[in-house]
Image (cartoon, rainbow, N blue to C red; front, side, top):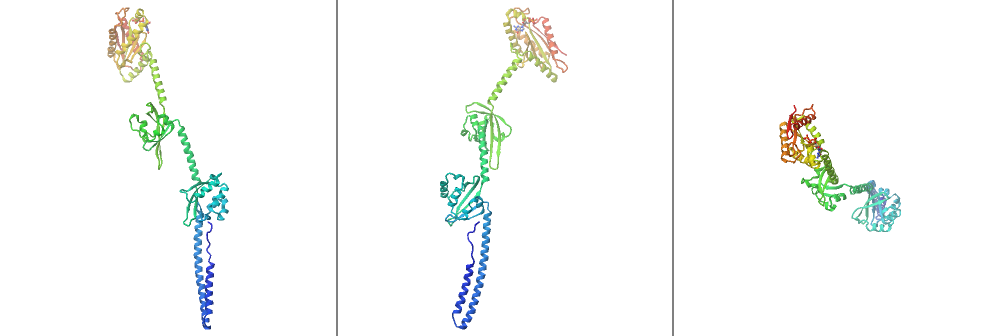
Length: 492
Ligand SMILES: Nc1nc2c(ncn2[C@@H]2O[C@H](COP(=O)(O)OP(=O)(O)OP(=O)(O)O)[C@@H](O)[C@H]2O)c(=O)[nH]1
């Protein structure tokens, strides 16, 4: 800190000596010889006393001034040690004191500081050296504006100097009309703010460009912000979405939607577009919690189209699977389904110990039928018989399959021979009652069936083929016995 004043003690000492001397002269100038003698001694004593007193006073003053100088030096050192610069201008706006930090900030200005230049002179010199980047190219206007606002700024000034140093400048008026300025370097803070602003801008750009919808929710689940993808997804503008509770967007199932309970793994939720169209969405919620902030970020992926395609594909696959196991002419199961069904139920029977029965059905004299009515009517007859058989078999008739030509097979699960016989008889009766004309049949004038029935409890060592063989043999016997009948055969 540069010195403001210097205490001088020699005038006091001179004054004391003069007073003593005058007293002596006065004492010798008045009175008689004797008096003069006494007065001379008295004057000399007074002078001595004055000198002693003066010395005491001067010494006390010197000590006091020494203390004051020490205090001032301590103060100056403390101000010099401050991390901020301090500058003191008098009422003429001349720089009368400053600390070391000011010189460190403006090393090239040290001579101007020592000259006790005015604020205007100092700023003009700094501008001339290009020390204030924001003023470059408009130095005069900038200086005028700076002078106009000198000491009147409602808030501290933020100023960039030397291209990469940022200062926060505080200016206050003193009661005597001067100005005290304090400059704090805030370069690190500004750089941090700039980094923060850059990363915020980057995040904002990412969110805005994201293909997924991104919603920011407050701690209560109300929308704070929605990105453009969200607007496209729901058909509502960001302003319309603002403040809306998340439950209004996703709560279609009627369940209360709370972001806290949605944290973690993605969830599949339904929603409705503004147009009323249903949306299939995958929603992931993450929580942001600091000392002062509590919000949720909600990422929404639209898989409505994918789900539609999946459903179309599923239906197509189901159709394909049905077609691959369905007889194209009659609509009942085909031979492949029969083989699968028999094996599957056989294996299940080996585990459960339940009976499994097989009913083999053959239309009598179907060759004659074709010969008489033609193949198209023959096909029609096959369809009618298949429909009648299905109606006779419980459980939706899924177990009726076309075994080949005019032959059908019915797999009856958990059914013993007696139960299978009931079903077989129902088939015979059903076709008889349908009275499908068959003029060429030697049996009767309508279509009839021959049926062979076999049943057993499947065992692991046996082959389901055995059941087919026995049922087929029974069918053969029924044919041999005159047709239009059923024969049952239990397998041991
Ligand atoms: N219309 C039509 N006829 C078929 C079809 N599949 C097989 N057939 C006919 O069914 C007839 C079966 O004749 P056969 O095996 O001799 O038996 P059947 O005449 O019924 O005599 P039995 O079985 O001994 O009573 C053949 O004439 C085949 O052409 C079909 O899909 N449509």
